[in-house]
Length: 119
Image (cartoon, rainbow, N blue to C red; front, side):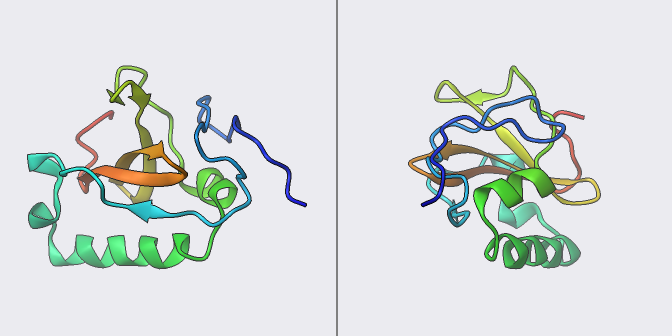
């Protein structure tokens, strides 16, 4: 039986995954909230859409723990949404995706292709 955790420290993050449950279960990404105006799909160039698709293809085959170890970046302690720490994942060089963990899913808040948030 998989070990159940609610807190996990991951390489380079210093932050804690909460709300995931079993970190060895499949990573699930979703779009629950309206993306911020400057950080949505309409602002992406074709090359950035392709980078995002490569990221989605990779994480669709990974667990929470694997995604966190490979893509998670240092958090900005002031970056919260609904009183939850926003997580930053590296999509590609200079391209970040921001979101929160809610109900065992990564809920996307921003697509940041030029790494404007939390440099």
